[in-house]
Image (cartoon, rainbow, N blue to C red; front, top):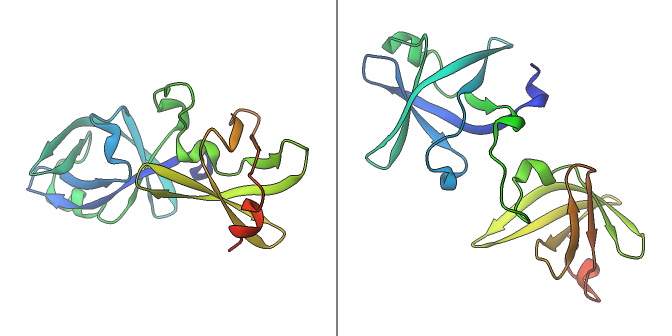
Length: 173
């Protein structure tokens, strides 16, 4: 498994107690109970897989126990490390909903065939997200709404948009 094949889902904040429990920060709070059985952590240039022994929320913070991490010293060695998971381990979402990592890198083009560029970032503002598309050295922000994003196909890496007049010039960053 290579790091580029994995998705970052959080970070280890610190150890918690003497038994190897880790306090973590998950990047997406809406997951509820984590779906992953195996996670990956990079240490000294190598990726290592860890079986998830348990997960709990206490005092509004997520805590993780990993098989093989049984002491304060072992847990502290993982402090600050990124937590990675395989994309295929993510549960399927309802039709019309996507994980950020599925949209990053997608080619964006207009209904009339004009290629704009690739999605390089997503910005979330409350309930709305913006696709940040790099186009000819500039970045364009495009609202991720059905009225504009007419077809989203992460499998083929394409997003077809129908921007209202002036949107592409207005949102250049």
